[in-house]
Amino acid sequence: MKKLILVGIFLTVLSSFALADTVQINTDGWTQQQKNYIKAAVSSLLHNNKITHDGIVVNLPDVTVNNPSDSISALTGTAIKNKIIAFEVQTEAARVIKKQEQAEKDTEINGSILKDITLAQVDTKIDSISNLSEAKLFLKRLVKYLVAREILP
Image 1 (tube, rainbow, N blue to C red):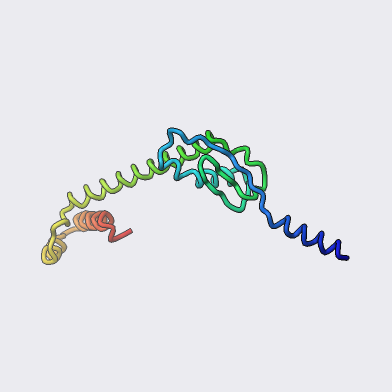
Image 2: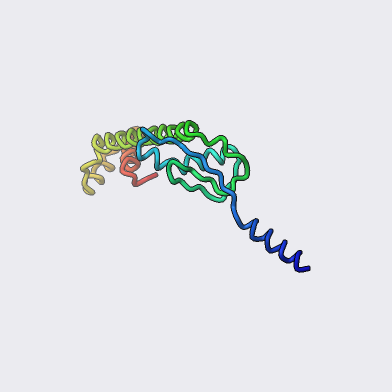
């Protein structure tokens, strides 16, 4: 009976130790931003390969994956760097789009007849609308201006 208890305790202690796999990557020539992306890139690569784990530790040049569910052979320096470059491309594309959208908003705001309009002028402008076409035009300008100013979504 004592032997069974000791075996049970031994197996419990043994199972509490997580296995870890480590890969080394050469980050010579990488920017600090690219080095900062390593953990995210490793996590993404593991997820893409359906490998679960209990954590990732980056202590360059070592990248350690705690208790991976499968081989981490997909984690190579090249694969990690390619994933980081993909992140950078996506980030830059989003930045360019956001910058273009902001420029369009700025152009709309700066070119709008509503930019410097006073409350009294609003009443006068609305009262001077004499047909549906003028009403549509005013409403379009108003909505574009409010959207550009981020007052409307």
